[in-house]
Image (cartoon, rainbow, N blue to C red; front, top):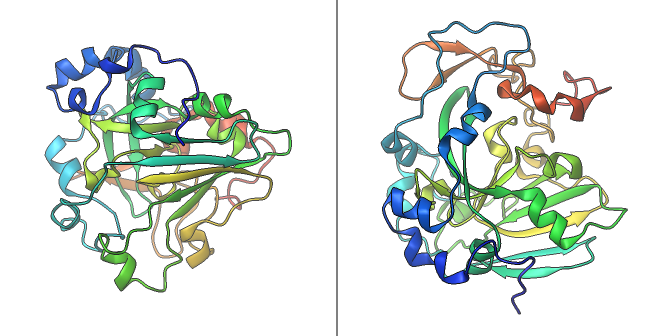
Length: 307
């Protein structure tokens, strides 16, 4: 049974799957999308006193590259093969269950979500733990809006996320049978409630493509990309730190927090620099991926240990 969590920000018939397939300008108008300029500041380099050369400007990654270079092991280990393998992945119908330590558990269809939450454009840097990065114009809404609607109970301290388990459509879930599928991730509740944390439903003015995590995914821009799981089906509020896929596979290489930190190397490579997809010169990596406004979340923590 589907349950809307809040009053729609606009009539339901203004945000429909059909509207999502309109041109960029039509989509922005149909979805009540805020001006891109409103969110450019979120992508401006924040260096914390360490200047970055002006040559390292933040420009949007080309749509072609972002749609054809994808880490998505559920489909393939080859980044350039995911797009084709995922082309027929079905995203309709889709439901997201929100439960656990909440006063108002719910099961929402994608249509419920689009009707209840205004989709805004957020231009964020994305830093992969492998050492490459992109700048992407996500469309979505802050996760804290959904959490506010379900009302976490006082004992809730973490948010656990689960991705879709569909091995018949995702060959990687069959071939990588030693992975603890489905893909699981987690955030502390205060991280999940931060303004920068969003649930994304679109990219480049269009609905998310299957290879980018359709139809709805998490985006946490100050953390390595593997924290931003794709194709969400389940969100649960819990008291204890939840298990996560990569941390379960190799805790010495992939921490629970996974905050971007150039001072903490991966055991097999340096994290001091990165290569922006589409560029040829490496650039310095910024602490928290340049989003210094999240530093207060980790006061008193040793960032070298809690990576």
